Length: 499
Image (tube, rainbow, N blue to C red; front, side, top):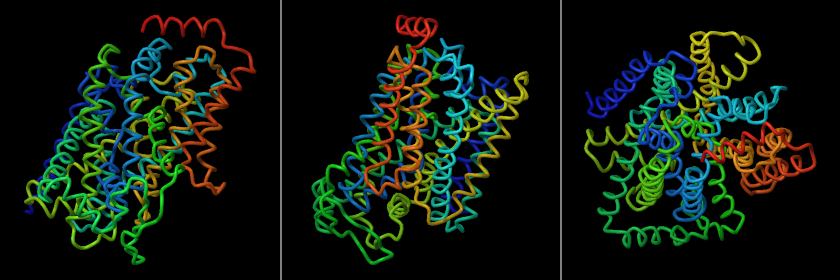
């Protein structure tokens, strides 16, 4: 049997073993959704990073760097993401961990918003859960597309068969073990991503002859590839290979940097902050996450795409295959199998988290809240598992189009979450005068702006207007309306004092 096949099979067996082991540790809904709030600093750090980056770190971002070099999305996007991740860990993580426990031990974001503002109408919970389901369907679909591209490029599978194989494996261990299975597998997956990207980038630069030779090689292909302020067009299907596309402009740079704003509203990342054992471990987790989970993988990913421009002789029909092709060219089948398993790891580590958060929205925020308030913990866990299956099926349907782009799907979902939940999270945690109506209105305005922005014809990334309009709405509605109750402000003060 091909060594690459053996490596993949061993990796899948390990994941399923973790799912079976953690199945016995999952007895309550808190266990299934938050792992009973008992994650350590290392698992929290790697799990947050793994659930963040997904398949686009090894497929989408290297593909963007391969197609455009320093320009277009790649460099500015990476800078924005690094800054956003740092601010999210530095300012949001600790306060969210403390506040969710103070607010009646909230275990989902919709439940936190409801408890934070004492919303008896259930509107905050309902609207936020609906937005989570809507945007996560696209995000989950992006991960399944990435998985299909991996199996298609590595084993020459049919796209649709590859899509189904990836979906079945991810659903299996998420279904069994819930949050603990997802977090422990994410720890392994994040480490694999870190090693795969770092090794591929270091070996690639060394074999080319250093950074000077790399940039010289890129410049010989097209000068705009080495210019952070220039755009480059790439479309092999139409015969366009690295053609200069003029200056990026301030709108393009702002759009790429704005990806960093998305961190404040990503439920699958924020839930890691809520699950850590103690807020006192956040600082250690932040250091681990930023160095090993963000900065090194992010910039190694860019280098991989740029190395592909110089090293791969035949231009790729699909730039998002650059990491796969580079690994197969450079390493023997055993090492290649290990490194390509990291792509599968990146994909699974985000899709499983998305399935779990979507499942929690259906179970906690719809089923228990509106249909079965007296449901037992065992019943809720099984409803959560069935929800995972349902959401996965819909995501597979969305991903069925084999021309789908990983980065395009991620871009839309990332903007949706960032604009819908980013401003409500920040104002809920840091502004004492924030009101329930302000958060509700801001959430709706931010989410709908992202959904409808393409109709305006403006090219700026949906995140920018969505985040801005959502924030302004929260401020305006909170100021002109009735202020928060004394009970709400007292709880806010307690949280601040506890910090």
